[in-house]
Image 1 (cartoon, one colour):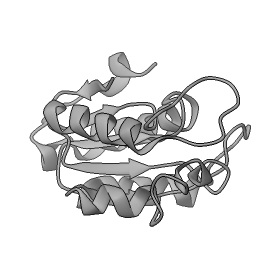
Image 2 (cartoon, rainbow, N blue to C red):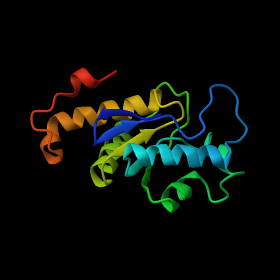
Image 3 (cartoon, helix red, strand yellow):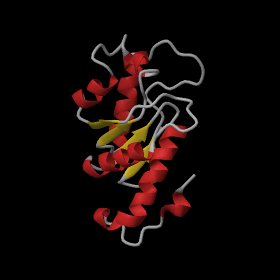
Image 4 (cartoon, rainbow, N blue to C red):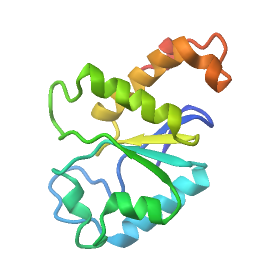
Amino acid sequence: MAYWVIEGLLATSPRPGYQPGWESNVPREHVEIWVEEKRQFGVASILCLISRDQLPLYERSLPNGLLHFYREVGFEVAHLPTNDGLTEPYTPDQYELAWEYFTRLPKPVLVHCSAGYDRTGRVVNHILQRLEQHGDRFGLNGFNGHSLRR
């Protein structure tokens, strides 16, 4: 499932095959289903936030890795990795890098970490703050993202 933050521009989702609790691998078919759902949703690009703590979940089913698979099936991809469960997962410079990725990637952009909440929410919040300042670049004149923030 994906969720629009701003329809046609910015969306969020859990990673492919996300299940709460312990996991050892994510089957390729789960990734393929996830990809097809995101295509039907209209996603053009993915900003992936998962890191070395979760990317190995895809090694058995996707020998070249999840990010390569995304590119292989036609998504534009940016990767801003950080481990799950950190109190402060990103530095100010990394938040700005997320904004830069967002501005460069074809729209709509889907942002995902593992569950699609903590890291994703922080990055999306930063993007919304920046859109308040620069929304006109994306056809959002007078945009106020405050009501959209979780």
